Length: 393
Image 1 (cartoon, helix red, strand yellow):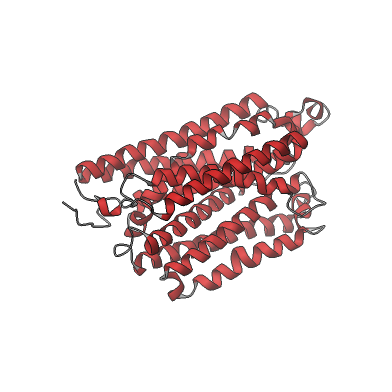
Image 2: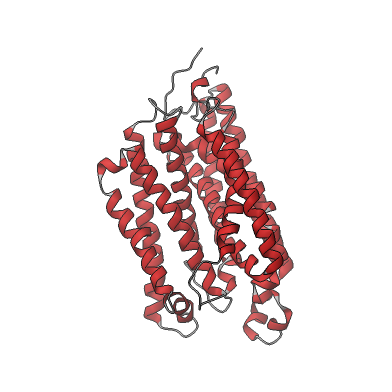
């Protein structure tokens, strides 16, 4: 297929400038974070974990949405398909950025401190699973699975563009069906490992589902924001219309509701049970000033987006969808911070400057790589049967 030139980012497109700005931000944030790590290693690791977990969940959400598109079909998925592929190709970077977490396990996780385990019968009971070598081996396995599926899907996606073979779509469907099962299992255990085990005396069977819901919502926020930008300033204009944006808006509304339902279900079940080993997890997150963070999340992560996205005109306008998606992305950061930080410090519900520095460091590097991946190839799948595109000579 020879077409698609008009769907490639033209020279001088704002995305190129954003990529350079993101790289500069990442380097500057990294320098500040390194200075913070020297001055306060423990605080650096706590802040870094929040930032890294946020960008990992966003990336996995994009990979999940890519697989959902191949299984469910529809023009909505074709619109975000190339963007999701570009996001999934950043997984090797996130695997490298796991190194500070791996090196700081004793400072982050009490089960990684032998002196704590020696005096805690529960930690001794869980030691067969919660130990440093097995923890690191699982992390390597998770990333191997995620990167493997991302590259497998990319290879067949490019094959579809090159050959326009209708059988490739069936192959992508089969890969994605198995991939969604593998992704669900690995994401669940990754959530248990990386955030739930920060407080190893507490557990929730729905925790992995909440992590998956958060990931898809974060991924959707990014993909919709980029789609809106490309509609207004780039190659999507005239091809991606209000109908596509409307479909994406409806999916975003559904995931806002779904994530709120997951979180409320866990809360109401835990609160109703009123068990001494379960209640402290919430008490740390609803007292001492943290209740204002909860209120912020309820209003701006659920109530306001829900009301705004009910409006049909909002979902059909790129400018409005961009605002809603960016606002949700910010609230996803706040929600991740609220989820992780009280495990370390319940007395200070105020962001530390290293929280900002590490978020900019990881996010700047991630966005720089993401924007770079968008260049040099069509941003719309040329042979996707759900989005017919007339080829150019």
